[in-house]
Length: 127
Image (cartoon, rainbow, N blue to C red; front, side, top):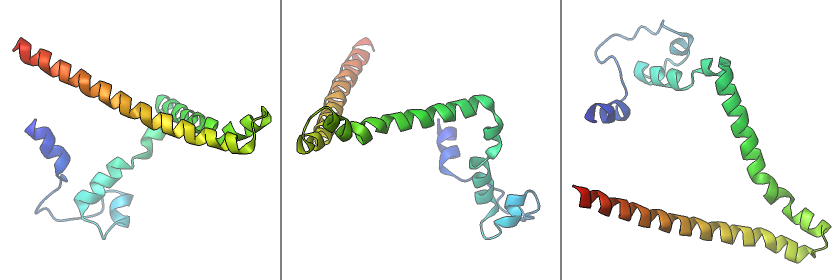
């Protein structure tokens, strides 16, 4: 576990090794940054994933899901007005959705907290 923590909390680098900067295009462009930082950034911004078809399908699915998430909020008032609800009450629907959404998040967090406490008690009881 300590090896994992060390790997995510420190920037790997070549301490004491001369910086040649001739490895990649990124190393030649980012001369103001230390070599370990450029190495980490080039690994994080690796565009080769975009050539993977499965990864692109996942990205497309996420984009469509996020667009679909906001559609009800965008068209709710217009749809309510079209159904004959006056403009004031139609606008109030957005705040009702927001209030109930937040209330549901608190209820869900409370249920999860109770569930974790029960799991902890059962784990303590077993050992």
